[in-house]
Length: 422
Image (cartoon, rainbow, N blue to C red):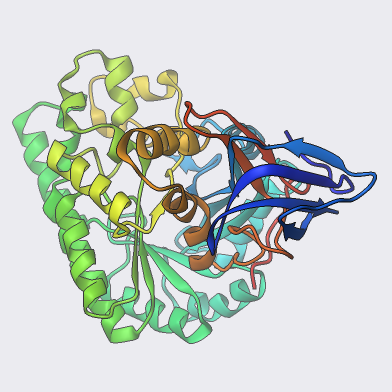
Protein backbone atom coordinates (compact mmCIF):
# COMPACT_ATOMS: atom_id res chain seq x y z
CA UNK A 1 0.00 0.00 0.00
CA UNK A 2 1.67 3.21 -1.15
CA UNK A 3 1.00 6.60 0.39
CA UNK A 4 1.01 9.33 -2.25
CA UNK A 5 3.11 12.33 -1.44
CA UNK A 6 0.09 14.59 -0.85
CA UNK A 7 -1.75 12.12 1.40
CA UNK A 8 -1.68 12.73 5.15
CA UNK A 9 -2.14 9.79 7.52
CA UNK A 10 -2.25 9.09 11.22
CA UNK A 11 -1.04 5.62 12.15
CA UNK A 12 -2.79 4.90 15.45
CA UNK A 13 -2.59 2.25 18.21
CA UNK A 14 0.62 0.67 16.95
CA UNK A 15 3.82 -0.27 18.77
CA UNK A 16 6.44 1.98 17.21
CA UNK A 17 10.03 0.71 17.05
CA UNK A 18 12.16 3.82 17.39
CA UNK A 19 15.73 4.52 18.43
CA UNK A 20 14.42 4.81 22.00
CA UNK A 21 12.87 1.36 21.83
CA UNK A 22 9.20 0.40 21.78
CA UNK A 23 6.71 3.25 22.05
CA UNK A 24 2.93 3.05 22.17
CA UNK A 25 2.36 6.21 20.14
CA UNK A 26 0.54 7.66 17.19
CA UNK A 27 2.50 8.72 14.14
CA UNK A 28 1.53 11.48 11.71
CA UNK A 29 2.62 11.55 8.07
CA UNK A 30 2.29 14.84 6.19
CA UNK A 31 3.51 15.30 2.62
CA UNK A 32 5.53 12.12 2.76
CA UNK A 33 7.41 13.05 5.94
CA UNK A 34 6.94 11.93 9.55
CA UNK A 35 5.77 15.17 11.15
CA UNK A 36 4.76 14.06 14.65
CA UNK A 37 5.13 11.12 17.03
CA UNK A 38 2.99 11.57 20.14
CA UNK A 39 0.79 9.50 22.50
CA UNK A 40 -2.38 10.84 20.90
CA UNK A 41 -2.55 12.86 17.70
CA UNK A 42 -5.78 14.61 16.76
CA UNK A 43 -5.94 16.24 13.36
CA UNK A 44 -8.94 16.91 11.12
CA UNK A 45 -9.05 15.90 7.49
CA UNK A 46 -6.45 13.17 7.88
CA UNK A 47 -6.86 9.49 7.04
CA UNK A 48 -6.40 7.11 9.97
CA UNK A 49 -4.79 3.69 9.81
CA UNK A 50 -5.50 1.53 12.84
CA UNK A 51 -2.32 -0.42 13.66
CA UNK A 52 -3.67 -2.15 16.76
CA UNK A 53 -1.71 -5.34 17.59
CA UNK A 54 0.93 -4.30 15.04
CA UNK A 55 4.58 -3.33 15.08
CA UNK A 56 5.40 -0.12 13.21
CA UNK A 57 9.00 -0.24 11.95
CA UNK A 58 11.09 1.60 9.34
CA UNK A 59 10.63 0.39 5.78
CA UNK A 60 13.26 -2.11 4.73
CA UNK A 61 16.51 -1.03 3.09
CA UNK A 62 18.23 -3.68 0.96
CA UNK A 63 21.76 -2.45 0.30
CA UNK A 64 22.83 -5.35 -1.94
CA UNK A 65 20.90 -5.86 -5.17
CA UNK A 66 21.86 -6.50 -8.79
CA UNK A 67 19.08 -5.50 -11.17
CA UNK A 68 19.61 -6.24 -14.88
CA UNK A 69 23.34 -6.74 -14.35
CA UNK A 70 25.32 -8.35 -17.21
CA UNK A 71 26.63 -11.78 -16.19
CA UNK A 72 28.23 -14.41 -18.43
CA UNK A 73 26.56 -13.29 -21.63
CA UNK A 74 23.13 -12.71 -20.09
CA UNK A 75 21.47 -10.34 -17.61
CA UNK A 76 19.91 -10.93 -14.22
CA UNK A 77 16.27 -11.54 -14.92
CA UNK A 78 14.79 -8.63 -12.94
CA UNK A 79 14.69 -5.17 -14.46
CA UNK A 80 14.74 -2.23 -12.08
CA UNK A 81 10.97 -1.98 -12.49
CA UNK A 82 10.35 -5.66 -11.78
CA UNK A 83 12.87 -5.86 -8.97
CA UNK A 84 11.65 -2.78 -7.13
CA UNK A 85 8.06 -3.98 -7.41
CA UNK A 86 9.21 -7.15 -5.65
CA UNK A 87 10.93 -5.02 -3.02
CA UNK A 88 7.76 -3.07 -2.28
CA UNK A 89 5.62 -6.21 -2.16
CA UNK A 90 7.95 -7.60 0.51
CA UNK A 91 8.23 -4.54 2.75
CA UNK A 92 11.42 -2.97 1.35
CA UNK A 93 11.14 0.71 0.41
CA UNK A 94 14.76 1.45 -0.59
CA UNK A 95 17.47 -0.49 -2.42
CA UNK A 96 21.11 0.22 -3.19
CA UNK A 97 22.31 -1.41 -6.40
CA UNK A 98 25.81 -1.72 -7.89
CA UNK A 99 27.09 0.20 -10.89
CA UNK A 100 30.06 -1.80 -12.18
CA UNK A 101 33.04 -0.19 -13.87
CA UNK A 102 34.38 -2.11 -16.85
CA UNK A 103 38.12 -2.33 -17.28
CA UNK A 104 39.30 0.46 -19.57
CA UNK A 105 36.22 2.56 -18.88
CA UNK A 106 35.55 5.29 -16.35
CA UNK A 107 33.57 5.28 -13.13
CA UNK A 108 31.42 8.03 -14.60
CA UNK A 109 30.41 5.83 -17.53
CA UNK A 110 29.27 3.10 -15.16
CA UNK A 111 27.37 5.56 -13.00
CA UNK A 112 25.55 7.11 -15.96
CA UNK A 113 24.69 3.70 -17.42
CA UNK A 114 23.08 2.51 -14.18
CA UNK A 115 21.22 5.79 -13.73
CA UNK A 116 19.83 5.36 -17.24
CA UNK A 117 18.71 1.82 -16.41
CA UNK A 118 17.00 2.84 -13.18
CA UNK A 119 15.73 6.42 -13.42
CA UNK A 120 12.04 6.64 -14.33
CA UNK A 121 11.71 2.88 -13.93
CA UNK A 122 12.07 2.19 -10.21
CA UNK A 123 9.05 1.92 -7.90
CA UNK A 124 10.95 2.54 -4.67
CA UNK A 125 13.83 4.83 -3.77
CA UNK A 126 17.27 3.65 -4.79
CA UNK A 127 20.93 4.49 -4.53
CA UNK A 128 24.12 3.17 -6.09
CA UNK A 129 27.39 1.71 -4.95
CA UNK A 130 30.23 2.04 -7.48
CA UNK A 131 32.33 -1.07 -8.20
CA UNK A 132 35.95 -0.23 -9.01
CA UNK A 133 37.63 -2.83 -11.21
CA UNK A 134 40.33 -0.73 -12.93
CA UNK A 135 42.43 1.27 -10.49
CA UNK A 136 44.19 4.10 -12.30
CA UNK A 137 45.14 7.65 -11.40
CA UNK A 138 42.08 8.80 -13.35
CA UNK A 139 39.64 6.43 -11.63
CA UNK A 140 40.94 7.41 -8.21
CA UNK A 141 40.37 11.07 -9.06
CA UNK A 142 36.85 10.18 -10.21
CA UNK A 143 35.95 9.07 -6.69
CA UNK A 144 35.54 12.75 -5.80
CA UNK A 145 33.09 13.15 -8.68
CA UNK A 146 31.13 10.10 -7.57
CA UNK A 147 30.92 11.46 -4.02
CA UNK A 148 29.46 14.66 -5.47
CA UNK A 149 26.84 12.52 -7.26
CA UNK A 150 25.74 10.94 -3.97
CA UNK A 151 27.76 7.72 -4.16
CA UNK A 152 29.36 7.09 -0.77
CA UNK A 153 30.38 3.43 -1.11
CA UNK A 154 32.83 1.74 -3.44
CA UNK A 155 32.94 -1.99 -4.06
CA UNK A 156 36.11 -3.95 -4.63
CA UNK A 157 36.78 -7.60 -5.48
CA UNK A 158 39.56 -10.00 -4.61
CA UNK A 159 37.90 -12.67 -6.80
CA UNK A 160 37.04 -13.06 -10.50
CA UNK A 161 39.86 -12.29 -12.92
CA UNK A 162 37.84 -9.66 -14.79
CA UNK A 163 36.84 -7.85 -11.61
CA UNK A 164 39.52 -8.30 -8.97
CA UNK A 165 42.21 -5.82 -8.09
CA UNK A 166 45.53 -6.37 -6.35
CA UNK A 167 46.07 -5.77 -2.65
CA UNK A 168 48.24 -2.78 -3.53
CA UNK A 169 45.45 -1.26 -5.61
CA UNK A 170 42.91 -2.08 -2.91
CA UNK A 171 45.02 -0.11 -0.45
CA UNK A 172 45.14 2.83 -2.89
CA UNK A 173 41.35 2.76 -3.17
CA UNK A 174 40.90 2.53 0.58
CA UNK A 175 43.21 5.47 1.25
CA UNK A 176 41.29 7.60 -1.25
CA UNK A 177 37.87 6.53 0.05
CA UNK A 178 38.99 7.27 3.61
CA UNK A 179 40.08 10.74 2.46
CA UNK A 180 36.63 11.56 1.07
CA UNK A 181 34.68 10.03 3.97
CA UNK A 182 33.24 7.03 2.16
CA UNK A 183 33.27 3.29 2.79
CA UNK A 184 34.64 0.31 0.83
CA UNK A 185 32.45 -2.74 0.38
CA UNK A 186 34.33 -5.91 -0.46
CA UNK A 187 33.67 -9.27 -2.10
CA UNK A 188 35.96 -11.36 0.06
CA UNK A 189 37.29 -14.43 -1.74
CA UNK A 190 40.95 -14.91 -2.64
CA UNK A 191 40.99 -15.24 -6.42
CA UNK A 192 44.20 -17.25 -6.59
CA UNK A 193 42.79 -19.80 -4.14
CA UNK A 194 39.61 -20.02 -6.18
CA UNK A 195 41.54 -20.63 -9.38
CA UNK A 196 43.57 -23.38 -7.71
CA UNK A 197 40.45 -25.02 -6.31
CA UNK A 198 38.71 -24.82 -9.66
CA UNK A 199 41.71 -26.45 -11.29
CA UNK A 200 41.41 -29.38 -8.91
CA UNK A 201 37.70 -29.72 -9.67
CA UNK A 202 38.30 -29.66 -13.42
CA UNK A 203 41.05 -32.27 -13.05
CA UNK A 204 38.60 -34.52 -11.22
CA UNK A 205 36.36 -34.54 -14.30
CA UNK A 206 33.15 -33.82 -12.35
CA UNK A 207 31.65 -30.54 -13.56
CA UNK A 208 28.14 -31.17 -12.23
CA UNK A 209 26.56 -28.54 -10.02
CA UNK A 210 27.48 -30.41 -6.84
CA UNK A 211 31.12 -29.47 -7.54
CA UNK A 212 30.37 -25.75 -7.37
CA UNK A 213 31.07 -25.36 -3.62
CA UNK A 214 34.37 -27.25 -4.00
CA UNK A 215 35.56 -24.41 -6.24
CA UNK A 216 34.92 -21.87 -3.46
CA UNK A 217 36.65 -23.11 -0.29
CA UNK A 218 36.03 -21.40 3.03
CA UNK A 219 39.75 -20.62 3.33
CA UNK A 220 39.47 -18.34 0.31
CA UNK A 221 36.88 -16.22 2.11
CA UNK A 222 38.85 -16.19 5.36
CA UNK A 223 42.11 -15.21 3.66
CA UNK A 224 40.46 -12.33 1.82
CA UNK A 225 38.82 -11.09 5.02
CA UNK A 226 42.18 -11.15 6.80
CA UNK A 227 43.72 -9.12 3.98
CA UNK A 228 41.03 -6.46 3.97
CA UNK A 229 41.20 -6.18 7.76
CA UNK A 230 44.96 -5.56 7.51
CA UNK A 231 44.45 -2.93 4.81
CA UNK A 232 41.64 -1.27 6.79
CA UNK A 233 44.02 -0.95 9.75
CA UNK A 234 46.69 0.55 7.51
CA UNK A 235 44.40 2.99 5.70
CA UNK A 236 41.87 3.79 8.42
CA UNK A 237 39.10 3.20 5.88
CA UNK A 238 35.88 1.54 7.09
CA UNK A 239 35.04 -1.66 5.27
CA UNK A 240 31.84 -3.63 4.74
CA UNK A 241 32.06 -7.36 3.94
CA UNK A 242 29.26 -8.43 1.61
CA UNK A 243 27.52 -11.83 1.69
CA UNK A 244 29.47 -13.33 4.59
CA UNK A 245 29.01 -17.12 4.42
CA UNK A 246 31.23 -18.82 7.01
CA UNK A 247 31.68 -19.10 10.76
CA UNK A 248 35.44 -18.75 10.26
CA UNK A 249 35.00 -15.49 8.39
CA UNK A 250 32.65 -14.19 11.06
CA UNK A 251 35.20 -15.05 13.76
CA UNK A 252 37.82 -12.92 11.99
CA UNK A 253 35.41 -10.00 11.81
CA UNK A 254 34.41 -10.30 15.48
CA UNK A 255 38.07 -10.28 16.49
CA UNK A 256 38.81 -7.27 14.26
CA UNK A 257 35.95 -5.31 15.81
CA UNK A 258 37.32 -6.05 19.28
CA UNK A 259 40.64 -4.59 18.12
CA UNK A 260 39.07 -1.35 16.92
CA UNK A 261 38.76 -2.03 13.18
CA UNK A 262 35.74 -0.32 11.66
CA UNK A 263 34.36 -3.34 9.83
CA UNK A 264 30.77 -4.34 9.16
CA UNK A 265 29.43 -7.81 8.36
CA UNK A 266 26.56 -8.48 5.98
CA UNK A 267 24.97 -11.87 5.55
CA UNK A 268 22.02 -12.91 3.41
CA UNK A 269 18.87 -14.97 3.96
CA UNK A 270 20.18 -17.85 1.84
CA UNK A 271 23.06 -18.47 4.26
CA UNK A 272 20.62 -18.59 7.16
CA UNK A 273 17.93 -20.67 5.46
CA UNK A 274 20.08 -23.35 3.79
CA UNK A 275 23.36 -25.20 4.13
CA UNK A 276 25.53 -27.25 1.80
CA UNK A 277 23.30 -30.32 2.12
CA UNK A 278 21.28 -28.87 -0.78
CA UNK A 279 24.14 -29.77 -3.12
CA UNK A 280 23.32 -33.45 -2.57
CA UNK A 281 20.08 -32.98 -4.52
CA UNK A 282 20.29 -34.35 -8.05
CA UNK A 283 17.49 -32.40 -9.74
CA UNK A 284 19.17 -29.68 -11.82
CA UNK A 285 16.19 -27.31 -11.73
CA UNK A 286 16.32 -27.12 -7.93
CA UNK A 287 20.05 -27.54 -7.45
CA UNK A 288 21.03 -24.80 -9.92
CA UNK A 289 19.14 -22.24 -7.81
CA UNK A 290 21.92 -22.51 -5.24
CA UNK A 291 24.79 -21.62 -7.54
CA UNK A 292 26.05 -18.44 -5.92
CA UNK A 293 29.41 -17.15 -4.80
CA UNK A 294 30.33 -17.72 -2.09
CA UNK A 295 28.29 -20.94 -1.95
CA UNK A 296 26.29 -22.29 0.95
CA UNK A 297 28.43 -23.64 3.79
CA UNK A 298 27.91 -26.39 6.36
CA UNK A 299 25.37 -26.41 9.18
CA UNK A 300 27.93 -25.07 11.69
CA UNK A 301 28.37 -21.91 9.62
CA UNK A 302 24.62 -21.62 9.19
CA UNK A 303 24.10 -21.66 12.96
CA UNK A 304 27.09 -19.38 13.62
CA UNK A 305 25.62 -16.77 11.29
CA UNK A 306 22.27 -17.06 13.07
CA UNK A 307 24.10 -16.52 16.36
CA UNK A 308 25.69 -13.40 14.83
CA UNK A 309 22.32 -12.12 13.70
CA UNK A 310 20.86 -12.59 17.18
CA UNK A 311 23.86 -11.19 19.07
CA UNK A 312 24.67 -8.17 16.92
CA UNK A 313 27.95 -9.49 15.50
CA UNK A 314 26.30 -9.50 12.06
CA UNK A 315 25.41 -5.89 11.25
CA UNK A 316 23.11 -6.13 8.22
CA UNK A 317 20.84 -8.61 6.50
CA UNK A 318 20.81 -7.86 2.76
CA UNK A 319 20.06 -10.17 -0.14
CA UNK A 320 22.60 -10.09 -2.99
CA UNK A 321 19.44 -10.23 -5.13
CA UNK A 322 20.52 -11.45 -8.58
CA UNK A 323 17.94 -13.85 -10.04
CA UNK A 324 18.14 -15.96 -13.18
CA UNK A 325 15.54 -18.16 -14.82
CA UNK A 326 15.97 -21.91 -15.14
CA UNK A 327 16.36 -21.37 -18.89
CA UNK A 328 19.30 -19.05 -18.25
CA UNK A 329 20.88 -21.58 -15.88
CA UNK A 330 20.35 -24.63 -18.05
CA UNK A 331 23.36 -23.72 -20.20
CA UNK A 332 25.44 -25.09 -17.33
CA UNK A 333 23.66 -28.40 -16.89
CA UNK A 334 26.83 -30.29 -17.83
CA UNK A 335 29.32 -27.67 -16.67
CA UNK A 336 28.53 -25.63 -13.54
CA UNK A 337 31.07 -22.99 -14.60
CA UNK A 338 28.59 -21.77 -17.22
CA UNK A 339 25.75 -21.15 -14.76
CA UNK A 340 25.23 -17.46 -13.96
CA UNK A 341 25.61 -17.02 -10.20
CA UNK A 342 22.88 -15.55 -8.01
CA UNK A 343 19.42 -15.95 -6.58
CA UNK A 344 16.21 -14.07 -5.77
CA UNK A 345 15.60 -12.41 -2.39
CA UNK A 346 14.58 -8.75 -2.41
CA UNK A 347 10.89 -9.58 -2.07
CA UNK A 348 11.20 -12.15 0.72
CA UNK A 349 13.96 -10.85 3.04
CA UNK A 350 11.68 -8.98 5.46
CA UNK A 351 9.22 -11.87 5.65
CA UNK A 352 11.91 -14.50 6.13
CA UNK A 353 13.67 -12.69 8.98
CA UNK A 354 10.39 -11.95 10.76
CA UNK A 355 9.05 -15.49 10.50
CA UNK A 356 12.31 -17.34 11.17
CA UNK A 357 14.00 -14.79 13.41
CA UNK A 358 11.35 -12.94 15.42
CA UNK A 359 8.69 -15.65 15.65
CA UNK A 360 10.89 -18.76 15.82
CA UNK A 361 14.29 -17.79 17.26
CA UNK A 362 13.45 -14.94 19.59
CA UNK A 363 15.06 -12.16 17.57
CA UNK A 364 13.91 -8.91 19.15
CA UNK A 365 11.83 -6.61 17.00
CA UNK A 366 14.38 -3.89 17.75
CA UNK A 367 17.16 -6.04 16.23
CA UNK A 368 14.87 -6.80 13.30
CA UNK A 369 14.56 -3.09 12.53
CA UNK A 370 18.28 -2.57 13.07
CA UNK A 371 19.34 -5.36 10.70
CA UNK A 372 16.92 -4.52 7.91
CA UNK A 373 16.75 -0.73 8.00
CA UNK A 374 18.56 1.32 10.65
CA UNK A 375 22.07 -0.14 10.35
CA UNK A 376 22.02 -0.05 6.53
CA UNK A 377 20.90 3.58 6.65
CA UNK A 378 23.64 4.56 9.10
CA UNK A 379 26.43 2.70 7.30
CA UNK A 380 25.60 4.02 3.84
CA UNK A 381 24.69 7.62 4.54
CA UNK A 382 20.89 7.44 4.37
CA UNK A 383 20.26 8.16 8.06
CA UNK A 384 18.22 9.98 9.37
CA UNK A 385 16.11 10.46 6.24
CA UNK A 386 15.82 6.68 5.99
CA UNK A 387 15.98 3.74 8.36
CA UNK A 388 14.33 5.30 11.40
CA UNK A 389 10.94 6.45 12.69
CA UNK A 390 11.75 10.03 13.61
CA UNK A 391 10.20 13.43 13.08
CA UNK A 392 11.60 14.76 9.82
CA UNK A 393 12.39 11.32 8.37
CA UNK A 394 10.83 10.02 5.16
CA UNK A 395 7.59 8.18 5.77
CA UNK A 396 8.95 4.80 4.72
CA UNK A 397 6.95 2.78 7.23
CA UNK A 398 6.30 -0.95 7.53
CA UNK A 399 3.41 -2.19 9.65
CA UNK A 400 3.58 -5.86 10.70
CA UNK A 401 0.85 -7.79 12.44
CA UNK A 402 2.25 -9.17 15.71
CA UNK A 403 2.63 -12.86 16.52
CA UNK A 404 1.46 -14.24 13.19
CA UNK A 405 3.34 -15.04 10.02
CA UNK A 406 4.42 -11.94 8.13
CA UNK A 407 1.34 -9.87 7.36
CA UNK A 408 2.13 -6.30 6.50
CA UNK A 409 1.32 -2.94 4.98
CA UNK A 410 3.98 -0.63 3.58
CA UNK A 411 3.60 3.12 3.46
CA UNK A 412 6.23 5.18 1.69
CA UNK A 413 6.34 8.70 0.52
CA UNK A 414 6.41 8.70 -3.28
CA UNK A 415 7.29 6.76 -6.42
CA UNK A 416 10.95 5.88 -6.52
CA UNK A 417 13.76 8.36 -7.02
CA UNK A 418 17.53 8.38 -6.92
CA UNK A 419 18.97 9.22 -3.51
CA UNK A 420 21.58 11.95 -3.27
CA UNK A 421 22.99 10.64 -0.03
CA UNK A 422 25.30 13.40 1.16
